[in-house]
Length: 103
Image (cartoon, rainbow, N blue to C red; front, side):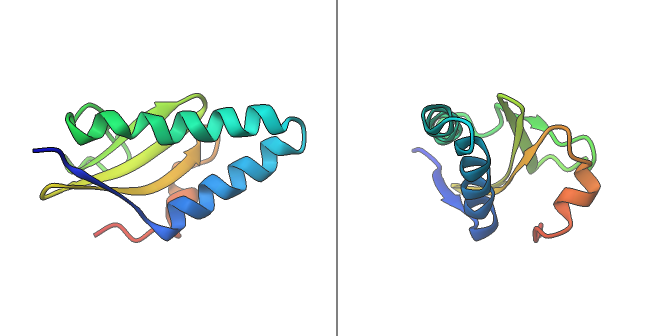
């Protein structure tokens, strides 16, 4: 049985911000990056622990996938994958993660 993917409102805001930023230069690449981010979550349905444990947090249930230069942070719950955040890799993780609620 596959896990269900759920996107937090904050993660959706992250995606929108990423798209808006990239779109300043290229609508094509903005769409391509956003599509790749969404597509990358599909494999989590069958393989929820494919991502590495987020080193700054160190919890087995909080993991991340790297998609281009973005860190897609997610939490593995019972039969559910909660996408918590999509953070640019150059941002300080501790500063960036403050707005997200990780339980």
